[in-house]
Image (cartoon, rainbow, N blue to C red):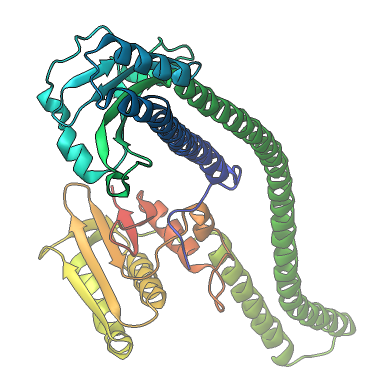
Length: 470
């Protein structure tokens, strides 16, 4: 089957090169995707670790505040009043000793009325902060975490050194009673504990981890691609050299085959010539002897010489007709009538093959040429078009007055562009049967009329042949 899109045999690795570059881009894309995916996973893991650590710190603060401040204060003073300086200083001492070394930026304690009761910062104690919602937190009895970015630019992942306090983890925890003199008071929420921690260092670690993965994957991908590309270039060069050597050997083999075919042809012709020459020679010798002896001879010997000479002349003429095509006798020819005669002749075969022939020809097409030779050329092309259609199909004939071109199109498989020159070579055929002289004879006829013959494929599929006349 003829293929219009035939790859370049001298460069069989063009597709592989394209795939290698595409693979590089795909690998780089997947590498960056994997980098950010692993980085995001690591970020979540580190953030979860920070949350767990903050929860432990909050539970420890709850325990220390209750054991070292709340319970002793209630036993000593009967009631907790942080507005009293001794109680506030004792709570501050407990808090500072507990959070020491844990990178706590600021710690605040709110009562159930959302009033700031204690802070390690500079805010004024005793102010009511409605946005805190202490009672809602107290009812839920859950621990809340929130990561706060402090004006971090979106390109921060490209840098390794982030400013301090770029990422802050805010933890909100309900302060509960652990145990009490009265069991019914156990687990009561006394207030809300909120503190912040600087986790910028963890984010810097994640950024470094992401860049380390990206660098390793990128370098590995580039090394693999370079090795693959070198191998492909080397293989491409070796294949190209072998293909050139193969083409050279094929050309030599083709020439040898032509010489062998010519030898077989000459052997057959010499055999056909040798027999008549032998008869002519023996008859002439017999006539010569009888003439020397003065004997009479009948008409048999001259007739034998005449018959064998005629046979020899016919054999030579047949060879010359093949080797030297007949020169056309130019007259005015109606090409449309010639085509109609051919269609009437091939009509039974067309109906048998279930082929539809569509003509788009004007009423009169006048050209200068030899009617017999043009009939033979168009007939051969229509026969080839029918043979190219395996089952039912269509053949279309059209005429371009402007370009003086007859176009014959069929719905067959089309032509192989790499074999375009071979189609018109003598003795070359793609069929199981045939001498391979049909298109060669057509090409000789068209060239004898000063025209040109071209083969190409249609965009919608199928082959096409154009005969251009002067």
